Structure formats: structure tokens, C-alpha cells
Image (cartoon, rainbow, N blue to C red; front, side, top):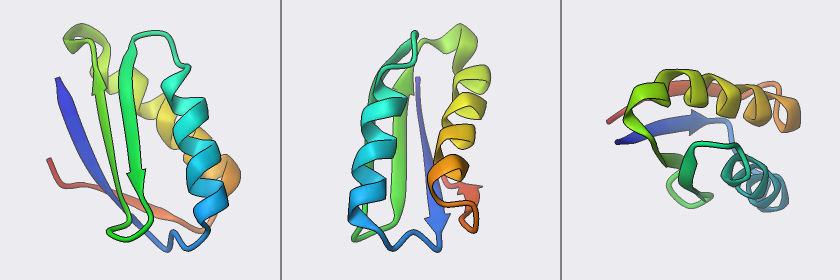
Amino acid sequence: MKRAFKLSGLCCANCASKMEREISKIKGVNSCCISIMTTRMTIEAENQSIDELCQKAFDIVLKYEPEISIKRVL
């Protein structure tokens, strides 16, 4: 299952790269892609645990960029 989110306020490419790398290491996440140009994060993960995995991803995003607001788009 795939979910996409708008990361309003994301402006640091280095932070985006760190987030993407750390989120990709979460058990159950198949892939994570964060685009600095579109400020969009796409997560592909196992169906049964997608909501829990997305919450873990949000925690990682907010660890690097606490001012970002996250809104689901897909």
C-alpha cells in the first residue's frame, strides 16, 4: 500500500535525505521517497501496518524539522 503526504515547510535537502534514509530502515517500510522540489513524501509499506508505520515516519520527520506540517494527499 502506498501513502503520500505534503510536507509544508520542508526546505532543507540534507534533512530530507536523512529523513528518507531513516524512514526506509523502519521494519515494514518497503520504500520512502521525499522530494524537496514538491515537498512530498511517499511511503510504500505493508498493508496491515501502514497507519502505524506512517506515524513512526511522522515522528522521524518532526525530529529533523519540528515546524513542518504533514497532510495526507494520497
